[in-house]
Length: 349
View 1: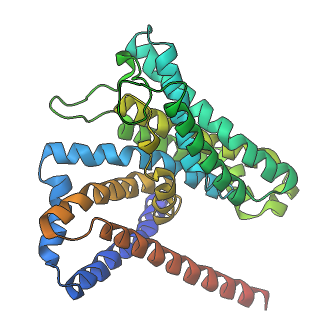
View 2 (view 1 turned 90 degrees about the vertical axis):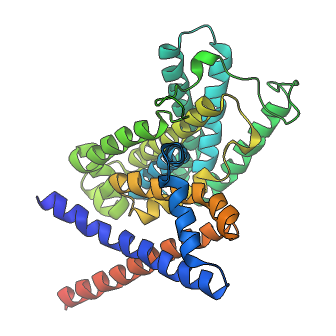
């Protein structure tokens, strides 16, 4: 019961931020001369007007739940992983190469193998920034951002060179073996298992963080490294391990995208790794909360074009909603931090 109460309390700030975002966004739409009701109806209809639209939103949420979880576990361990984008891209590379090289395997074997290779590739890409942070104190913010660009250029090199399908006008890889295509869960739709796999992993990650000693170590390092060392926790090993898990989660997101698209392309990620930061922050870095915030952002992504087509509102306006949500959470966090410091100061006095 106490755990449920704490979880419900954690929902207050995100809910308030979402409400404020739509309220302020509605005022901005009104001031700009748009039909607010029609605009919001378009956002709603883009997800909930039909089963097909709903499944599209779920699929769009799939990479976001993985990048959101990747960011959350890293932030919990005091590692600011800004490289989920690059880790997702490298995970997509690993899954693509696996799908091309092992096309003779049956689907029940090939699909898990692609996901595993995506996870290992993402973890490997996150290892170097994590090691540099733990061993030499190099800023992981800088190194992970740099690795994002390296991963992006690596994708470009592969789809324009070694694995390019020359039969296509746009640079892309050869299609992976059909056995590696993610099966449609509902006939007549393209709903795949990605988001539902993310839900299972999110629940598992929640129990790892809050119900195991390993999760306790991650949270302890995130709260106070000096106290963690005093308690006998290896801060450096925990940081590296956290980054490995973070990279693996983002890499799975990349593998899922390849299994859905069936090939690798430069635009396979329009910024899923960066959006994952917003998804995680809005959820308070809580894995269970990320299940909902990732779906929210996926729905907003689906509704962007519908809102532009129906109400004439620029699709980029959806980013205004996202930005207001993050600002609201940031303001609430700053206020909470100041209040905590004031209480702590009074206790000292």
